[in-house]
Each structure stands twice: as C-alpha cells, then as structure tokens.
Image (cartoon, rainbow, N blue to C red; front, side, top):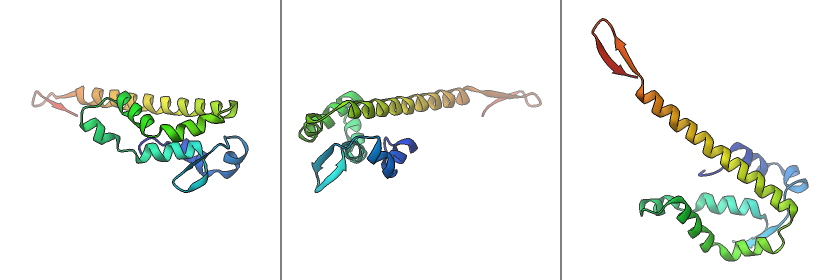
Length: 130
C-alpha cells in the first residue's frame, strides 16, 4: 500500500469507529454507493500510478494536482456536504500522513549515517564500511 498506515487500516476495518465517530459522507463512484469518502480517497490514492508520473520527471506536488484534477467531480461531491466531523477526520489524516513523512525521513537519515560509518581494523590498518 502506498500511503496506508496501520492506524488508517484500523480506521477502515473497525466498523464501530466508522459508524460512530468518523464521517458518514458517501461517494457515488464505481458502483459502491455506501463507501465513506475517506475510504474511497485512500483506495483511489493507493491505486493511482504515481510512480509512472515520477518516471516522467513530475514532482510529488504536480502528481497530487493531477490526481485531484482526474478525480475533481467525485471530490466536489464530497465537499457538497463537508462538515466539522469531516474536517476533523481530514485533520487526523493530515497528522498521520505527516507522521509517515517524518518516519521515512528519519529512516533515510539513519541509513545515510549507517553508510558513513567506517570501522578500522587495527591489525590490518584498513578501513571498512559497515
């Protein structure tokens, strides 16, 4: 999955949470009239072929704009009845996504540091990378 954490998975799979505390806005696309918009959006993002756009030299912001453009009708349907509950859920998804971004950046930095570490074998007086 391209952008789905365990927390997002639990949101999707826990019916009590979905029914009681998250949005009940539905989107009418692909023959599923009872799918909550956040589930639809994540499914569409996960199936979107962003790497093809990256291979063409597009940056992530341009890819996101293209995704919004291609799904503009469905997204406008969601916004017609967007309320405070929806805004709260969107804010939670933004926090999760930002957290994911930070996790990947931290992992990237740890990998860079790991690759910079050299060990010296004092017996042979040679440096080796870890």
